[in-house]
Image 1 (cartoon, rainbow, N blue to C red):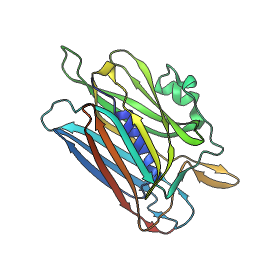
Image 2: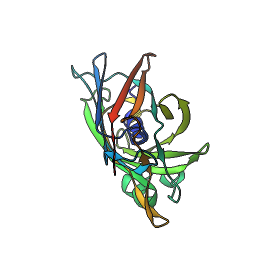
Image 3: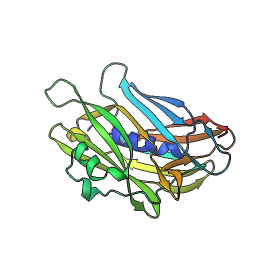
Image 4: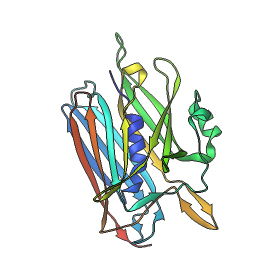
Length: 255
């Protein structure tokens, strides 16, 4: 069955702000499937100590060289650089109960204060007996209630095939201690279009700022250590194969 990695990739990319401090790109080829991802963070200059708010933009593409459907993905694991943070103090939260069965427009209106990122997802759907068709959806990232004392996201998407429905994906952020890495997300990949959908594109920007105590604070923050920050990812397919990749991005001290 086809799995929906659009939401997962977006979730992971949205969190990549923890570990990425400038533009970087990665390409992974799995059999006939090519996964490419680009991340850009502004500003590029970051403090050496203490975190500063950043905004992260991401574009992820999935395609095959011969026009066939991509491999089926079952899980994506990401570890992020420890030189960053997610700050939610004073930020409204949104719950799955508030977003159940909502369109993107209604969801964004209902939890406007909790929005920390927005984007677009696309997928190719191959229903039995029908020609392949592309569907797209706005993607919205909401600040969700903490999970085990750590921040979490709630991703909202909306699919129209085979019937309209809201898709909600909770994304907890775990704190780890693993060398360069201090944060982790491990997300099982859910279905799209009843199992007949395969992702083709996910893009988003995340980086909400707001005032607290008279100063500007950010949902995503980072500082520059050792001239680089990085994120490590692993993609697992349903046949048990694992494909790792690492994005290492340079940064410079300034600001």
